[in-house]
Each structure stands twice: as C-alpha cells, then as structure tokens.
Image 1 (cartoon, rainbow, N blue to C red):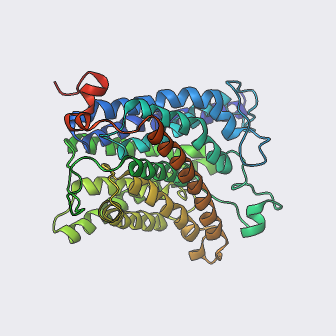
Image 2 (image 1 turned 120 degrees about the horizontal axis):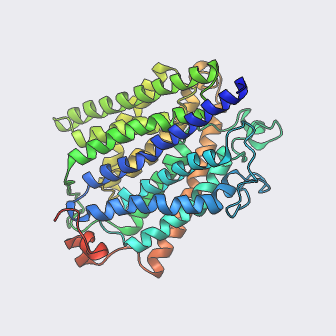
Image 3 (image 1 turned 120 degrees about the vertical axis):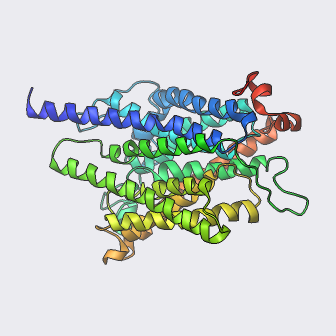
Length: 421
C-alpha cells in the first residue's frame, strides 16, 4: 500500500466515522423533542424522527444528491441523478458512496429540526409530505449554492460574490445551510398550524405547557453535543496530514467552547431574569452555542468561539420569549430560536470573528457583507418554500389534527399505540 492509498483509507474512515456521529444526532433530536413535549404525544414525536431519516435517505440518494452536487444549473441547482452516482467526481479520491452517506445525514438533520416546532398538533400523514419536499428540493437546492459549487461559494474572480465582496460566502458545517433553514421552516410551520389548545388565554397571555420528562431532554442534548463532534470536525472530511489533523483539532475545541459558553450564558441570564436558573432553557443554550459556531468553527479563534457561543446563549431566552409572547407563535421546543435565530447569528458573526477575513481582525466589511447576503438568500428561499408548502397543505388537505385528537393525544389516534402503557 502506498502512502497515498493509506491517506485515502484514513480519510475515508474519518468521513464515515463522522457520518455515524451525525446519524447519532437523530436519537438526540428525538429524545430532546420528546422530553420537551407531553407524554401523550411521545410515540408521534419519535416516529417523525424515524420518518425524516427514512424518507430523506431514499430521496437524497435518488434525486437530492444530484440537485446538490450536480452541475449545469448555472450555479442555482444541479441536475437530478435518479440514483446514478457516476456524475460525481470528488477530486479527493474519497469514495462517492461514502460522501453520499455523509451528506445524507446532514439532510436528515435539517428536516428533523422542524418536528419539534410542529409537535403535538400536526397530522402525521401531512408531516410526511413536508419531510418529502425538504429532502427532495428545499435542502438540496440551497445546499448547492454553498456546498455544491453554486453561486454563493464560488471563488471565481468573475463570479458575483467575488465581484461584490471580494470573498465568497462561508458556512463550514451548516449554521445557515442546515440549521437556519430548519429553524426558519420550523417558524413558518408553527405559524401555519397555530398554537396548541390552551397555550394562550383570552387576553393573549402565554401559558406554559411543560414537557413530561427533562431526563429524556437532557440525554438528548448530551447526545446532540456528542454528535456535533462529527457534524463540525467531520466537515473537514480529511484526517491525514498535519494540516488536516490541526484543523480537526481546532474545530473540536471551538465547537466545545461555544457549547459551554452558550449553556453558561443562558444559565446566568435566566438566573438574573427569573430569579432561578432554568435547566430546560440552559439545555437549549448549549444547543444555541453549538448552532452558532457551526458556520465559522474553522476560522475563528478559541476566544472568538467563546464569544459566539455566549452571544447565542444570551440571544436564546429573549428570542424564545419574543416569539412566544409577542408574536404568539407556539414552538414547544424552541427550535425556531435555537436553530433559526442562532443559526443566522452564528453565520453573521463569522464575518466579524473570522481570523482570516473578519471585521474585528482588520479585514473590512467585505466578508460580513457576503455573510449577510448569503443568509438572506438562503433563508429567503426557505421562507418562500415554507409558506408555499405549509399553507398549501393547510388549504388543501389540512395540516392540523382535530381538537379531540389534540386534547387526548396523537399517539393513540394517529398510531394506535402509546409509549407509556
């Protein structure tokens, strides 16, 4: 075996190991969402997380992979591959099927973010329709712009981004491409559904509807935190060579520091605001820090990672409060804040804290401008698709379960079985 063959083998094993870790985030999401909602809907929550991955895997292999990584779409979208993987040439020697499974688990993550925001009142059959379209079209097309060689990430001197800002849009592991898209779609979906019965009183005042099991929720967050060490460092794809080893180690550190800074910031903010530190909000604060660092985890310093995580941790409780109490949008798990608001914030802060291109390091506003335009276009696409999809379903076949089903629980009526017998 030559040195080159050994390097490719190491890189392949690293990529597949990272894919396993990202896949393990699916049970993390499932447990987190189940714990933050009521016991009568637990089977429904868990089932939707399975469906996201099952539907997403088939559709992304058959069509989505071509839309995301194909060419000939003038930078907007690739061509559908219809299960044929021969079109893809990585240029790195890594096997195409390995890269496909790595990208598949990212697609499933974006789809499953919406589940929690639409929990406890969505028809299961109609949720399957949503999962179908995000894996088929919504995620692969905007993913092409950034990760598939599309117009946002092009370093061509004659390309739009280089002529406008002198630097392309940057999203290393998905604060924008995965998380903000999932968060924005979650917000639109929750708005289309309307609040759960009893969430707001006659005067519009919000009432808390506690989840049934913080043990499950905390285990879910620990699993997500663990899986993020595949999500962010794994996006380096290569582990061989000194440069890759250094890069992976750095991303591990920035990812972890942002998580702890986010959790601590939320803990102290809630302690100050409510007189007692909120455990449930602190769990989401950890996730907020993880979401925020994901865009720039390769470009910021360790201190910058702490700052980004802390800022996201501060933003989180205020965002949840604003969406719930001011906008009257019922998001049972805070997905629109954790993934949407903090995904946007992390993408923008990359333009400030990037050591190589950021404003705080004397590089001007060009990179920040590129980040602003990128997140505006990506989430504008998500909002447009979400409105068409969710309100289209609502106006045609109905999105929400009947009142009696919602009051007595989706598990029995939608699936004929319960998690707790």
